[in-house]
Length: 154
Image (cartoon, rainbow, N blue to C red; front, side):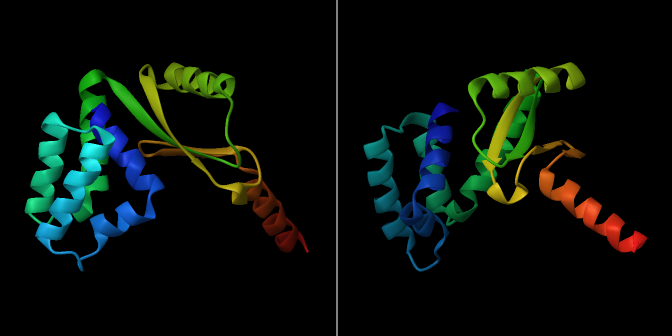
């Protein structure tokens, strides 16, 4: 799992790796050679490397991010964990992350892993999506609600 997480992080940080993974322009052999080089440089081996090579050989590397996300969900379900997608305006401190995890654990009764996305457009507050439930306490949403209320009142 750690190797897949490492590859996922590399994919998120590298435009070149994204292009290699998603572009149909690269042939299977080109993609395979490049992937092997990337995996060796990153120190990714064993089952994870074999799995990524299999996706490449079957011309399915373009879905690797979705496959890793689905695998994480299965592992979390097996471990009795839940995953929450959290959107914040700026990076949260470790104290705030721990408080958020504790609050979500008290609601769900499970350990909750956080996928934190930073989006300055929400201005402040946060948006938490856990399964089919979503709590939007962003400042942007509150301001939009006030704007709509003022339009209806006017």
